[in-house]
Length: 249
Image 1 (tube, one colour):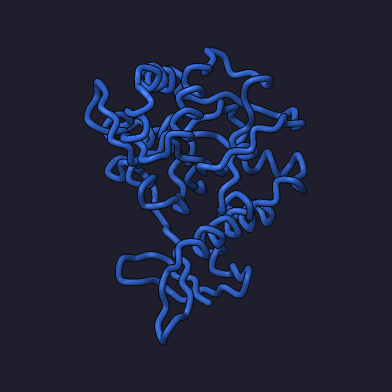
Image 2 (image 1 turned 90 degrees about the horizontal axis):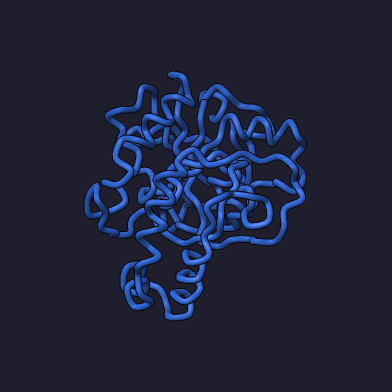
């Protein structure tokens, strides 16, 4: 069973003390995108990514400084570097070496710049969301740039087992499902508000992180066992009309 999550905009770039690491699989493609981004002006970055001038300056410099080698002095393990709402629920500070090994084998992170990351892959700081309309030699956006590569890489990793999709819609669109050779299970998390159940963004992100942590700590490899997930008072409530697995509270 492979679990899939999105990256985060917020990064923790402090030095990692974890000696375990791996290298990204799509370095050629990453460097191709970096070369494209290096040529962008500050105003180009602001318009392309919808960010402030300060953020444009920061990320322009990140692309200018991007190195040809991923090493501990210029990079950090992806699972430790990302610090968004999902990642804050993954208790990496208390992971054992066995936890990290299970995570490395069973979790993958989608990325606009890196395509598909293993948790311990070293990444250099960046910002490039999957939904950005960055024209490139393969098309008009990053979905066309990555094409079928991500789906095929997931197939190789999952070896025909299930895929648990805990990524956002923006990122999961980068996975060409026509090429997936496994069952896709998409859990959704809903809150009871004003007489009905609905998805509330912040709570849903945190719940996705809780489920990732639950999978890792309990070494879950059978999707059916996800139905026992009850962190933070969520409980299994069946499938919706689209086949999503509903967890409610």
